[in-house]
Length: 153
Image (tube, rainbow, N blue to C red):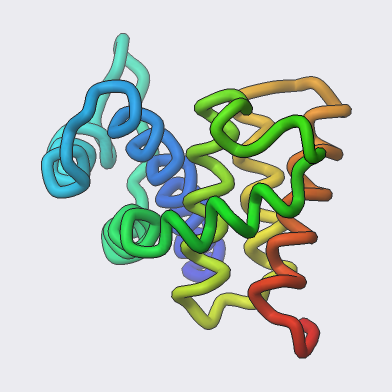
C-alpha cells in the first residue's frame, strides 16, 4: 500500500513537471517561480472542486531544475528521435515539455529507463487519447533512452 502511494506521488510529480515546463515556455516565468507556484498551489490543491494529487516534491523540483540544466542535450536527444523535418522546436509545446522532463530524468537520475518511458507514456495519455501519439511518444523516448544509456538498460 505504501509503495503504491509513493508510485502515485512520483507519477503526479512527472505530470506536474510537464505542466510546469509547458507553463515556463508559454509564460516566460523562471523555473524557480513556476516550481514555487506548483508546490504551493497545485500539490494537493483544489481546482474547480476537484482535489489534485499530491506529488513527490523532491522529484518534481529535480525534474524541472534538471530539464533547464540539461535542456540543450535533451533537446538534441529528442531531435535525433524525431523525423528530420520535425525538430523539437516544431512539435507541440506539451510534447516538447514532456520530452524535456523525461530527458532530464533519463540523464540526471538513476531511475531505470524502462520505468521512465512507461511513466511518461502514461503521462502523455493525460494530454491525448490518440494511440498514434502514444506510439510516437514511446518511440522518441525509447530513442532518447538508448542515447542516454548507450551501454543498455
